[in-house]
Image (cartoon, rainbow, N blue to C red; front, side, top):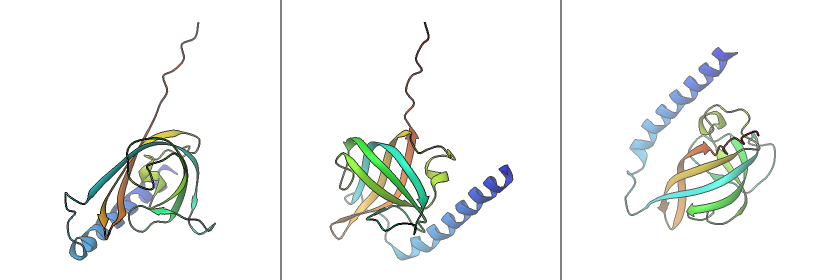
Length: 141
């Protein structure tokens, strides 16, 4: 079972590298003036394959096949649609890559960073990072 997971991650990384090579020839490099970074804390509510429901989504990256329902709890430095509290749905390539293989991400709270750039007056997000917010363990008396 572990070998299947490792194979899946290797396959995803290989696909990512191939897509990056294609994209490098098609799009200009990001301009410092257009770069944007959204930082926020959100609770992951659910994860499911794309296509199982109709929804307004925020696409992140390329070759996205997964929906991630989140509730934004706080924002630090952000742009639309990550600049206010509320529920949104992310369209991402791989939950395993975003949540570092954590299959139990739903129900947990993460600090997110979403990177992108402004294109034609609208944000286009290309990459996201998520780090679990671990609350300090309660000391027993």
